[in-house]
Image 1 (tube, rainbow, N blue to C red):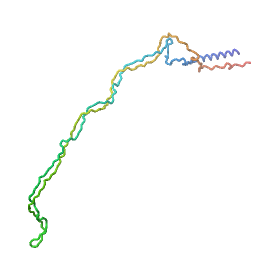
Image 2 (tube, rainbow, N blue to C red):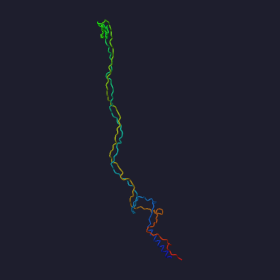
Image 3 (tube, one colour):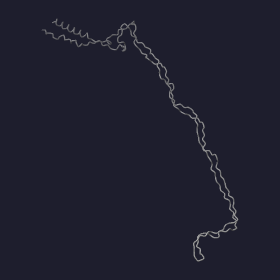
Image 4 (cartoon, one colour):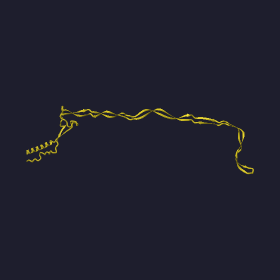
Length: 234
């Protein structure tokens, strides 16, 4: 019976050894290892991080040399005016007629018109008779007529032009020139530089930072219990 128990223990040990060959190592980042270290480092070299200066290049650039905008300037313009100017004023004239003196005057002695008249045969006829006048001695004085009349004033339009100063606002477009300017071609950055491995590193492995767990392979048979299949003893 002791021999059978030893054989079962040997079988379980072999199975565990087969599973142990498929262990995977799990390491944490508790050491503060940078994530950008080289993927395939040379174990005989040291890697130190150094700052690489930026590189520049000259490129053509369209630069504004004058902003432009609204600008004021003083200009001379001609101001034209038109006005009515009197060239001849109005005048007033008075006319006096001569006096008239008459020594004789005509006096109507028979009025004119249509009337009925009787002829020598005793017949009546309606006829027109002109008026009859005769001259009589009579003195009559008539004063002359006095009247006034005005001559209106005469005007003409006179156009004059005089220079005056005015402020004018005009839009001036911006001006551009092509200039060669310095441009960053490669920005400054830090990178790992390979050097000689003359330094001494410290082994920081420990239980907290370095762990190993065992996982069972798919091809690894599960170990059997040591008391499985053991014959009963008396």
